[in-house]
Length: 402
Image (tube, rainbow, N blue to C red; front, side, top):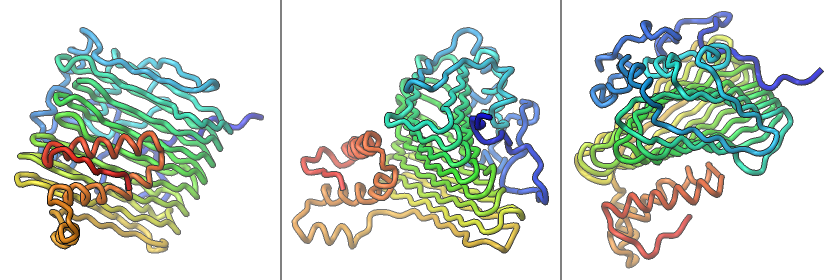
């Protein structure tokens, strides 16, 4: 008898024994009518610029998408990986239930570009599986949905890149099998006019180890909602993030970790810089520890470094603990400017002020770069941070990777 490809599909809409309703997360539903057009007063939308996202929040987006699909989705993987197209009608049996209106619209679009990727059990790949989403137009809203199943005890790295320009709503579901080791990296390198909303869901099997990273730099407005749940005890999740918001840019990361199995772990470390008038970042970190989730450990951290006047960084960590029998649960969030002592120390040793500021910023991101530990992405991240700094500090001739 062959092993199952991945952990049994569960989804957040399945009742859990001893379940207690949580105030942290909306009720999931496939029906668009269950996700009314937001006003900005709702808890899950209060930091989001609704007017900017209207092109992908209106049901007109479904009508417009019939004219043409303005994205290409290219999946590249090694031999042994199965890649097939999915009809929208097939999503309910595979994908995570939509958590908000953006997600529900993407799941309902009959013209969406959908892919199903299966990585077999026991497989181990040295080269990453790469998914490149390329936008070709911001005139027509578009949608796509991707389900990636990672088999039991498989080892794989998945890199997702967003490029070009688009008004895009999308859903990603990662079903990760028992004992698997998965690294999943998202790189947002959109052109300046892109508007991007995404739901990214992780279903983590028994004793699976999962590491995720978000590198968000491009786009006019980006809203990433990332959820995680556990299909059995022993699951270990690390979520990393690095982002850089420029003038007029909105970058939003919303995380929800549902500890719905005992002896599970989750750790979050997101760091961001802001520069320029009306640069805005949002980080929401919600962790729910259910009554069944005894012996769990969780910690989430968000740090923001404001480089210029006129920026805004919102950071809101939330813990909802429904059992006292846990190993640990904590969170921290901070927003600050350059550390005067660090700058003084560097300048007292002959480092010019602009170069000192540059070194402080690179040092700020060092832990994230180290934890990502995927050479191709780590090098890109350092280069992208430097490119952002050129805008405010000018060119450097002495940047070195830590």
